[in-house]
Length: 242
Image 1 (cartoon, rainbow, N blue to C red):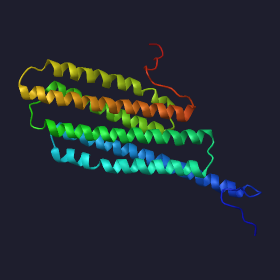
Image 2 (image 1 turned 30 degrees about the vertical axis):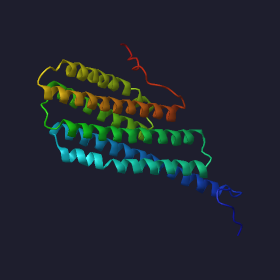
Image 3 (image 1 turned 120 degrees about the horizontal axis):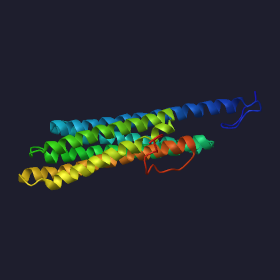
Image 4 (image 1 turned 90 degrees about the horizontal axis):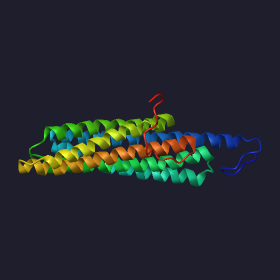
């Protein structure tokens, strides 16, 4: 029986078909890895927001201590992308998926880092008198950013370029809330402890604003993966009839 080296097609193309099928399975598994990272980043951000809402220092510590898991997932994703590039000669669409997966994994890892920052700020602000207006704005920001991260991750899994175009609209709201938090913090005069809390909350708002930016960046990578076009979502899409 004639054998053929690994990766070399047999005359009837059968080995190539098997190799290509295995590669497709690897790409599907890689998509699953990115989706799992998105879920982990979302959980970290949700827990950080819950810790802020309830002043739960133990939950904040859980977020901080759990960041290594997301870091390890990103390292594993990097290794897998490099392995697939080294072993295969991916066609254009598959190459775009590999590039996008690498960048999206990086953005999700950064979102996890921002969740850790939010948890640390929550601990620093514990026990200080709160401003209810700032607290409400931060909770709304958190809900919006969580929705953006979820939408961006689902857009990647579903190869949905159109969904990505809605992310800048949500990001505009996050940016507006970030500015509102700063304005309110600057207006706080008394007591001193509330002003100190406000400084921490302004920084926490910045962490959430950056997480929203990373979600938009993920959308840009999905757009590239699906369409092959490099694009920045700098302005909201024009609404038909608007």
